[in-house]
Amino acid sequence: MAAEPIVVVRDLSKIYRQGDINVVALDHVSLDITAGEFVVLMGPSGSGKSTLLHIIAGIDRPTSGSAKVQGIDIAQLDESQLADWRNQNVGFVFQSFNLIPVLTAAENVELPLLLTDLNGRERRKQVQTALELVGLADRGHHRPDQMSGGQQQRVAIARALVTDPALIVADEPTGNLDAKSAGDVLAILRSLTLTAGKTVVMVTHDPKSAAYGSRSLHLEKGEIAA
Amino acid sequence: MALPLRYNFRNVLVRWRTTLFTILGIAAVVAVFVLLRGMARGIERSSGNTGDPRNILVVRKGSQAESGSLVTREQFRTLQYLDGIAKDERGEPVISAELVMIVSAPRRAGAGEANTLLRGVTAGGMELRPQVTLKEGRWFVPGKREVVVAQRLASRFAGFEIGGTIKAGPDRLTVVGHFDGTGSAFDSEAWMDADEARSIFDRDMYSSVLLRPRDEAALTNLVARIQADKRLSLRAEREVDYYSKQTMTAVPIKYLAGMLGVAMSIGAVFAAMNTMYASVAARTREIGTLRVLGFSRAAIVVCFLVEGSFLAMLGGILGSALAWGVYAFVVVRGINFGTMDFQSFAETVFQFRVTPDLMLLGVLFSVAIGLAGSLFPALRAARLPVISALRSL
Ligand SMILES: Nc1ncnc2c1ncn2[C@@H]1O[C@H](COP(=O)(O)OP(=O)(O)OP(=O)(O)O)[C@@H](O)[C@H]1O
Ligand SMILES: [Mg+2]
Image (cartoon, rainbow over all chains, first blue to last red; front, side, top):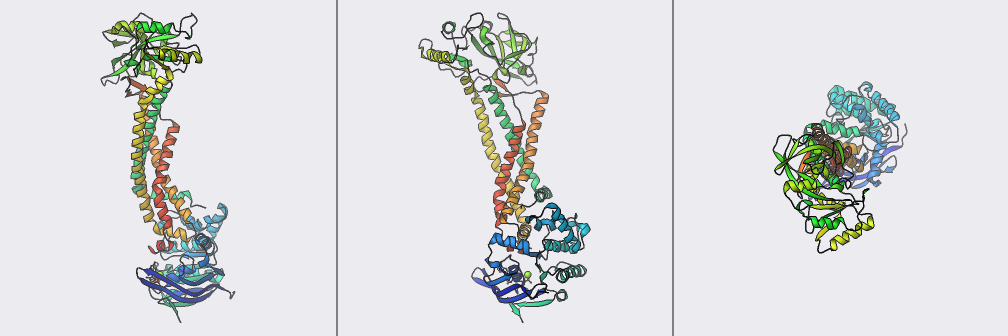
């Protein structure tokens, strides 16, 4: 496994201004993540886990400091560059699945591919591969409301990896799932790091989930605890 | 690349309960719009097809319409011998002295009486109006109490069939034929011999004189001569100009259509806007998700514009179909619509038609409503910060 860090975070701070009060969500955070790692972010509520994840994934911007992913300082990208960058380099998994209710599983998985140059046949092939990877090859034509929570989250994982991104971020992906489904989802995420060389950064509150990761980080009031 | 259209279609259909009222509202607006347009166009066409650019119409100075004009027999004789009038095969000047009267006749539908215009014409009357052709029966014989009515009127008035009679003053006229005015204003007239008409109504004078100059130069000369003659005190103008002024009847309808159109489309735009704002609010997280996946703000704007247009277009298609239904019903039943002609106080029969191009116009109109109504909601959707969209869990 390459020892080259895929994510390099340096002196990263995020301060939210709420009226006159400054809320320090991240306080000079530095960290490296190596390609192929399964990093688990833990910590109390409000400690800045989601904020850190959002900045690494290019959906929020730091107040100061830098976050480089595969050598690219994403804070320097403008909005539309950032959108393209996200589309090509990051897969997202959310706590509440965030599937589009009017689209079928296959159509949901296909969404990120609509922004690529692939033609319809190529897209369908990739969608099918992604659905197979999460064990839902035969559920492509089902709508989200026809599937269980665990199945919906697996569709979301398929959507996250269909563009073959190097980095997958997941914010409490098992928060809405029963133990069995949570185990399936975590196993899939772990196998992605082991067999496909993906890097996964996952936020969780659950120590049992954390056990699937290759490394755990604890955030405390916006700082990484030793 | 944009989001697939089926995403928009399904979102509109899935929310049908909230969108149905908006769709029906837009349908009503489009139906009224198409019907009023069809009506105004019918009036315009019938007046537009009426005059002949080669003819001069002469009325009394100060008269707005034929029906309020008086031309004496001496004046007619003077006009007849003016230089520059075309001659027919027998060497007679192509000119017709005409008497225009309003007669009231019972409607076929049973609902009371309606006015129609009775025109007395002299020999040249038919030659001067090539757009009028006999369809059934024969022309009236001069000196007889006979009348030829427009085919289109025959379906609306009782007794207008061939062999039927029309009450005219103290007398009755026998219908001997039907003519077709090819959509002109003559389609709402009945014609008879002018001198016979004068005797029935006990009139010494005609209403107007229609004549055909030899050529364009003669036309200009004749108009100038008649206008300049203080003794004659008559007004001469091109027949087409006279009828295009009469088209003013269409102006109030167009005005009404315009006002109603604006008022109703403002209502429809707000209805569409309301629906689209609700849709954006309900889909905040979905929009955030799409942005996270890499869709641009522009893609989101386009997406909601498409969705608003599609929603409105459903209403537009429904409304155009509704208007066509009204039209089809009218045609099938053979009913012609009458509107008050403010100039002659006779009923103008006009051809009211809902054509495919009008229906297309109605659908385009609905798309415009949809675009206008979804612009601000679309901009709001695009302005949502990605992160707040995600946090609205
Ligand atoms: N948009 C915002 N405006 C103001 N303050 C914010 C905003 N977003 C986050 N914060 C604050 O930043 C801090 C860190 O928030 P963050 O969501 O990263 O915490 P978290 O560790 O993910 O918590 P949780 O476990 O509850 O999800 C919190 O104090 C939060 O209130
Ligand atoms: Mg969080």
